[in-house]
Image (cartoon, rainbow, N blue to C red; front, side, top):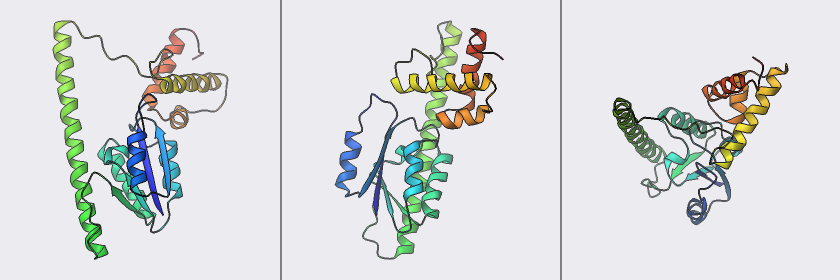
Amino acid sequence: MRVGYARVSSADQNLARQVNQLNQANVDKLFQEKVSGKNTQRTQLNALLDFIRQDDEVFVLSLDRLGRNSEDLTRIIETIRQKGAVLNVLDLPSFEGVRDCNLKALLTNLVLEIQKYTAENERQKIHERQRQEIQVAKQRGVYKGRKPQYVADSDDPQKRLIYEQIVKLLQARAQGERLPITEIARQTGVARNTVYHIQRQLINHQLLNN
């Protein structure tokens, strides 16, 4: 079976272009979602990984739709391989004409490794530039910091919803329910630091018992 996966990072972005190109690739089933690629706790991605079987083909428009760092990409790609499925990235070279299965797999893996390295290297350069810009802004006294993403008045409706879910889970935890911070982070798909930050805010505003 040919299985497609499409993802954008926020609710106000459009999936149409990815969906259209995946349909042109004749996928039989399509998983799609609007969620950040910062981690692998994504409902539709995990549903896809559970769904695929031996000899299935997984199609994505580009590698960064699967993940945003080399470690996550490696884990996801390895899961696809362990299931006996094949990954096809539409904006990378195709080796459909290669008849030798072992050679085709070798060439595909080589391209994926090069692409992962290139993407990770570019992200590191971007982060370094951002760090330097922040340092300069701090020296000039004009740095105000980045607005937290998961807040009650977030511009992103999905992040507002996630914030509300975290608050409810933290309130349940404060009332005695056994809910480790790790579990709250897993359920809501955010980093543990994000949950701890929201918890501190609620405590500081006396909205949550410590």
